[in-house]
Every structure is written in structure tokens, then in C-alpha cells.
Image (cartoon, rainbow, N blue to C red; front, top):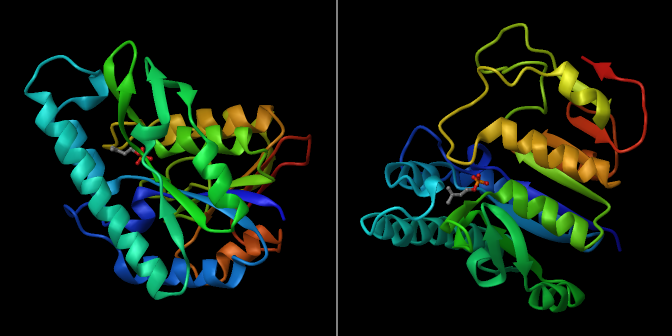
Length: 270
Ligand code: IP8
């Protein structure tokens, strides 16, 4: 069975402008998609922070690493609210008949200046073998240089995809895919349907695309996408709040989403 790593981005599952508000109906709809696919693929799920992680991490300057003791309350709060979101996802998924097993990033990863340098993956390996879906979230983890760091879900996705030799990685967002510029602010933004990873940087403008995320939103996502593609993994980006989209993406069916290929291909921009 092919293994697929799927990220549920913060903007897909939380109301980014609100504080601590999940998109309840969207998560239910995503869980139903997984119910239909869970016997056909193995999955590792990763989720981002959205309004449950980033505002708190930003308030306490957690992306700078450990500077002063006052930040440590922010570390606890970030963990608390991220786990709170994780529990909500877990509950919605089991209500829809999909079994997830949360794995805490800080228990399996250590970083050095923000990059994962140590990991313990045996538990994930075992859970995968009995077909329960491990779910990991972006979080505060121990860092050998900075004391702690904010590990983004995007970095977790590429680490998992490479270590478990995933067939592909899918980034679920609330937009159709990767655009030539930010579709939320630029009416001329066009969707990139398919592209060879080496051609991606020259087609996109990440200016104006940097939001309030402490982990650097688009810029870091693109970095992780290129890192995976360079190493032979296809990456797809799509709006997983659209019913049926996960199915389309997994089976390479025609649709509005982005495919970044590790092999040369003709660029298609819609
Ligand atoms: O939303 C970072 O994960 P991301 C999560 O995937 C926190 O960047 C704790 C801010």
C-alpha cells in the first residue's frame, strides 16, 4: 500500500482571523474523505497551528528561541492550545469512523537551529503497520542551539515523507493550490496546475505572500516542497475543504490543484 503524508494546514482547519476557532464542518468533511480512502492508502497526517498556535507563539517570540524566562509560559500555552486543536481533530475523526493516534513532535524530534537533527520514529513505524493513522502537529520542540524552536508542520511533512519513502506529500490548504502570486490579495494570480520543481521558483512571487505565521508561511512551504521534490517525491497542494478533492489528488484525476513533479514536465498554468 502506498504511503501518503498529508498536511492539514492551519488556514484549512482553523479560522485564522479568529482566536482558537476551528473549522468544525470542514474537519468533518475532511474526516469523511479519509474514511473513504483509509483502506486504500497508508497515511501520516500532520497539522498546522493556525489561530491555535501562531498568535501565542508570536506573542511570546518563540521563533527566536529561548531568550528569557517569561517566554516559558508561552511554551506551555502553545502546547496546550495546539493539543486542544489536536484533540478536536481526533474527536471529529473518530466520530466519522477514522482512527488517529497523536504523536507529539517534542517527544520524537530534537532540532538544531530549527532543523530536525534527531528523531525517534519506531512508534510511528509500528502504528503504520497496523493501519492506525499517526497524526503529528507543528509545535515547540527542544533545540540544541536555541533552547527550543517552533517546528513547523511543513518541516515535519518533508521529514516524514523522506524517512518513510512516501509516494507523495499533499498540502491541504484553503486555496486551490500554488498561484503565481497571492490569490487572496492579487486578482491576477493564476493557479499553477503542474510544474517541474526546478521551474517553480521563477513562476511564483512570494512577495506579499508572507502572513502572520511565525514559521514563515509560503516561503518555508516552498523551501520544503523543493527539498522533497529534489529527493524524488511528488508534492501536491489542494483545497481539501472541497468534498472529493482528496480522492482526485490521490488518483491524479483532472481537477484544480497543483502538482510539483520531481521529473521534468511541461508547465501548465491555468
Ligand atoms: O502551522 C507551527 O506549525 P505550522 C505551529 O505548520 C505553531 O507552521 C506552534 C505555531
